[in-house]
Figure 1 (tube, rainbow, N blue to C red):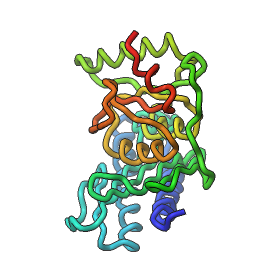
Figure 2: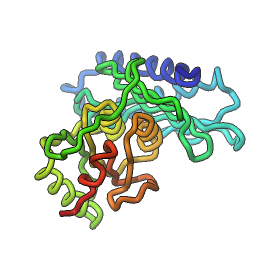
Figure 3: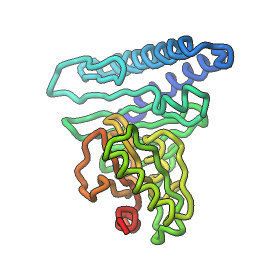
Figure 4: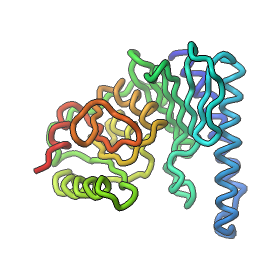
Length: 257
């Protein structure tokens, strides 16, 4: 495993352990909405700062970009680490154990190393460009399913009520009639990693932000998956509505009939 990935995994694990301790001490049932919002803000900001501090000790010349804490560093000749402590906040808010800590190391606009972990169940997905993807230190590859009717597909709901969201809901309805079954685990990053590990055979995802797109996108690509926006174009820009799947299911997933 690459030293950069080991470093990122160690920082993510430490943040995950801290997050679990905080959850154990917090009584959500007896807390008001305001107290819950403060707890979430405290978790995301402090743990994000903790990850960046740990990475910065080993890589002081690198740049860092947290989803909550913003950009830190302006050395254009050095890589940039993107950090997101909780993907998906909606699951975290109500105690559903399906959210991820995300780290990605970007060289320019390309992710070179990525880590996505679920601190609740211990899943640790990682990848380095050109070196494959791993789950808990074991190599993973996407599956080779050829029939959508035999596939379990992941999905996430689109946000809002605009035309793009309406079109995405129509795609979900078509997918529901074609696939063997659909699963919504909430986190876009984990959904992409599940396709990489062949837990899902494909996924139709909505409003994927740059943190999930860069980190989980590299893991999925290194596991042999194809990513495309819902119109079939391979170039993706966050926030993206996208399809991720094994190469044999891309065309059926994108079909409009």
